[in-house]
Length: 325
Image (cartoon, rainbow, N blue to C red; front, side):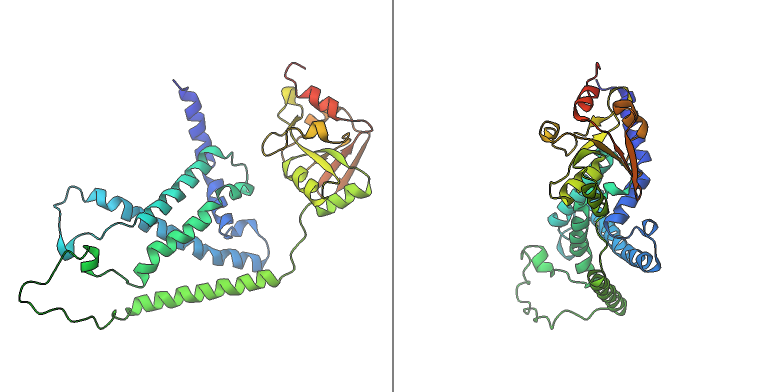
């Protein structure tokens, strides 16, 4: 039997992570207005809140459409024009997929900051498809004729005149026309924002300057937190090999990062001589000192601290990662 205390801790972690999850959804849709600076960027983020609102409305409509048949089980069955419209299997699948992705995000991802938003990326495309599926036909008031909804089972009474062909779908009401016009204006605004963003000069990746600095100082092998290790290795085209480490090793020392990392890299990389510390990542300087001792030199580049030793640090990292050491 599972430990109840473990489940209680898991539930507490999920509840505590709800604010980060909500901010992650905003970041996913480009609507995280709190995480940007500058009037233009804030305006862009606020405009994207409309997209979040549309998807939330689609989710609400899809949830009601999914549970409505169960709510009507107690009611007498009706047939004919007054019968409930058949369900939408595609919308139901999209809704379940959105719910499953979000539930897995809450339960499985240790949410420490909004950078984890990429773990919920499928919700963006699924939400867009769900919005088009559930709201489009309702806004345009498009519904299948009664004889199509019932599979053509109804037929005119004997002797009754054949129904006259429809003169076409009646025009949209004034409210629907206004809503369609507003949505078209929003879509046009999104297209303009996309053009502005595409034409604007993009900032270089965050760690490109650090990669150049390491190259100039002939530092070609070392350790760093996850993001810096991955990006520097890629930015340098493999000329600099950086192993991702954490400070969760035995006795508060460093240990190789095993998540999305080549665990065989320490056996293949050149002798390592430096450690990068980043204020945005959880690798404490005290853990570095406990593993390798005092560095020979210390440098600063932007927000980063580069600690350098005049020896190969790989054997000491391997020894520190052993529980009995």
